[in-house]
Amino acid sequence: MGHLIELKDIYKIYQMGEERVHALDGISLTVDQGEFVAIVGQSGSGKSTAMNIIGCLDVPTAGTYHLGGVDVSTMDDDQQAEIRNKMLGFIFQQYNLIPKLNVLENVELPLLYAGVSGSERRERALQALERVGLADKCKNLPSQLSGGQQQRVSIARALAGKPSVILADEPTGALDSRTGREVLGFLQKLNAEGDTVVLITHDNSIAVKAKRIVRLQDGKIIYDGDARDPRAVVQPDLEQGDMDGEVLHA
Ligand SMILES: Nc1ncnc2c1ncn2[C@@H]1O[C@H](COP(=O)(O)OP(=O)(O)OP(=O)(O)O)[C@@H](O)[C@H]1O
Ligand SMILES: [Mg+2]
Image (cartoon, rainbow, N blue to C red; front, side, top):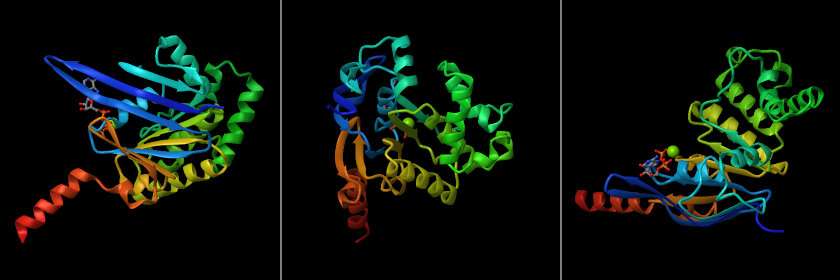
């Protein structure tokens, strides 16, 4: 079987007046079933652009993207929406929970849109809430939960759709560091149980919790490999800057 995710020579170019911005400048990347990959890089390096393409929220200017063997790089909005519902589970920095719906109803909502029957909705939502340890809170409103618990509800909502890929964009951005570590622990647990996770973050200390790191700089991949390799967290720009600083102070 082919790769679950296969990006080939992907460009995303924005025309800004006279200037052309290469948000993604020819990236190629494959992700297989069961991987836990962190896409990391500084502000403006192209992370969100990559996330939007991988998440079928946007199409590249050039290059091809296969998701589950299907070419999604040329799909129209409706086709993208369909493949998103079928293949992808999103976790965002903002939990996007609906305040008036209880926890269970929030997790069920995407399944309702996907046309899943009432009894199966309930069963899948409860199962997902159990996986994140929140089955006992299913009647609570989001406002009656802590930030970390709300993020776990949003993880359950992503899981209930039985996605092939979980895409998490700065999932710990709104949390204190302890709660952030906890949420990351959940992503690690899901991955250990077989889920494929792609995590987007600007934070090296978060990225190293993944198994593999893909580092972006100026729209290009400058590292792709084991998260435990020291080179995975070296930022050439910063290192150069630090060295200059040392010379100045010597
Ligand atoms: N809609 C757009 N129009 C024009 N330029 C854009 C657009 N979206 C992104 N860019 C540019 O593309 C580059 C990559 O942006 P992107 O949002 O992917 O960065 P990022 O790594 O997610 O940064 P951050 O960590 O700040 O969220 C930046 O130079 C940005 O200014
Ligand atoms: Mg971004």
